[in-house]
Amino acid sequence: MPKDSHGRDINYLRISVTDHCNLRCVYCMPLTRLTFSPHEDLLTASEIAKVTRAAAQVGFRKIRITGGEPTLRNDLLEIVSGVASVDGIEDVSLTTNAILLPKLAVPLRGAGLSRVNIHVDTLEAENLKRLMRFGTLEQIQAGIDAAHEAGFRPIKINAVVARDYNEEDVVAMARLTIERDWHVRFIELMPLGGGECAGVALSQYVPNPETFARIESELGMLEPVVAADPADESRNYRLPNARGVVGFISPVSDPYCGNCNRMRLTSDGKLHLCLLNDDEVNVKEALRSGASEDAISAILLKAVSAKPVGHRLEDGVSTEHRQMFQIGG
Ligand code: SAM
Ligand code: SF4
Image (cartoon, rainbow, N blue to C red):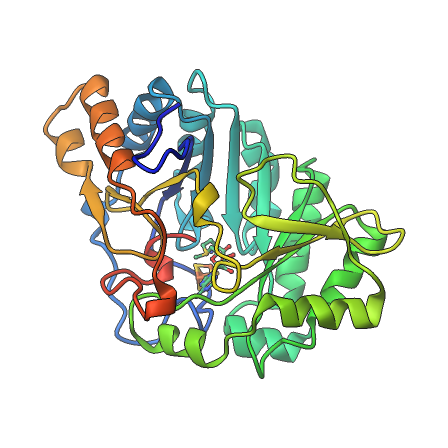
């Protein structure tokens, strides 16, 4: 398994397959002045498969497909089956807003997808409209149902918490875990890219200890659940007699950089070394000039060894060139 220069084992590659999205969450994607990568700059399904083979060769074991909204790629099934069939890859998951899952969940499972993480910030329709702007709760609910019927387990739900939008709705979301074996995870806002979304992330930030206290005061004690995977960025708990799990992803109030096991690949073919930092290594150039898999593996190892030790949000440092929809979370 590749180790970075800070002794961390890096075995998890998050692949963004598009910077387009059918929603416009207020903290992720602005409504105007958007620039997208030209179509010819996006890595193709076969280029993504090649990077995955090169990654598996040097010890990467987990892949997440993300975006933008990955389900907007017409060739998503080809991408997933290309990645899932690589020797050495043990787990392929997808992060999605679920809107297109009713038609895609079954074929995605057939293509070799292991798990889905579904993003929905609130169960209150009006608040959802303010936060995620397009799309409805009914559409996302239909997507969750489709994922469940297709056999994806456990269903993981990601909710970003934003002050004056949904900070009180966390209780109803956590309550879902009592009857269902879902993992409902609350994510702290992070500012990326310096634009209006970064502004929302800074001004509406809610620390997860506040969300934790709100849930405990309404629903009872949260008992810690031992992490199956030490690199899991979510600190997990269970409500009294609950079937599912409540998780807290706290990059700001409780950074998990020391356990980071990730490398990211942007849809335009750059290895992005740390979510909250602009450092990148170009892999597309090598792919398009006919580099061998061994050469791509060497580029991956170089990127791993150049990973920064951690983020510097507390010093006001984040990405300047990339917004969240251009990296994928
Ligand atoms: N469109 C898919 C989705 O929404 O799940 C995948 C891409 S989205 C960028 C991945 C994750 O990033 C989502 O769970 C979303 O909640 C989270 N996210 C987006 N912007 C964020 C921000 N500024 N701070 C924290 N999380 C953010
Ligand atoms: Fe789209 Fe996901 Fe960003 Fe929302 S968080 S705008 S669904 S990419």
